[in-house]
Length: 178
Image (cartoon, rainbow, N blue to C red; front, top):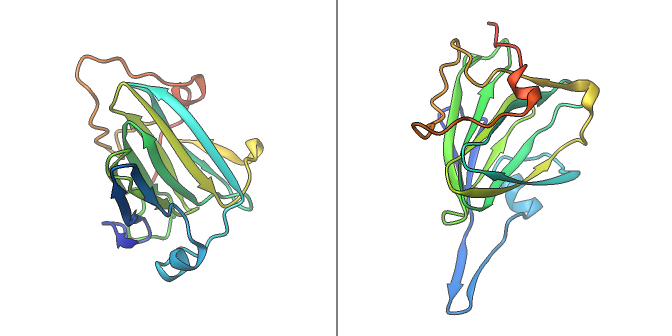
């Protein structure tokens, strides 16, 4: 496995070793000790799996302490653009974001620390996303940020002419304030 720190170094891209042959492939999608050596020390306690159609945008989501969630995100079918936004007020990268294409072809994963908001946009006809969380879902601590906040200026790589599909919660999300 290769662990690569992105432009915001706390967000880590994980590229697994892929063993391929005529039968298909095998990857180790999680190995606690290897992840610890790669800089990811969270213990993951919940796995989530979503399926979405093209044009779906999920996010930007986070949970407040003491239920803040670190996430380990991978796209097991299709392709998404995955986004992490630094929401740490005292951070030099506060309000900055990083993104990366995750797909069933590249088999890469993104580690999103618990101090970041997270979202993704579906580029392929459908996409299935699996992610591990460091704490369980706690709706009373859940928060959202409007995906198109003008302060953040996130390039979601939206497909021209395709409507953006949002949940009611994401439609009503407040903006980001610095």
